[in-house]
Image 1: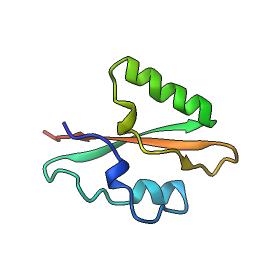
Image 2: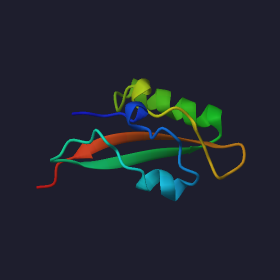
Image 3: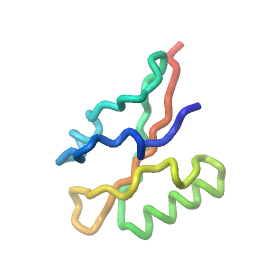
Length: 87
């Protein structure tokens, strides 16, 4: 299953969270739809959750996007994309 977001980030990051969610994922498999998982909060907490999810084998830490600016001052957003095949 293809996962991750770093290779799929647009060249210029969107200006808002809604724009970020609407941004196309150019390498999405044709028969699957992207599901975006977001972690939002203070950088240390977000990174801690990413690493805890790695320990739980939910996702490799490198599959998450780098920290992106949040509309909330002092916070970041990291995104993981998984693909779902509708039945």
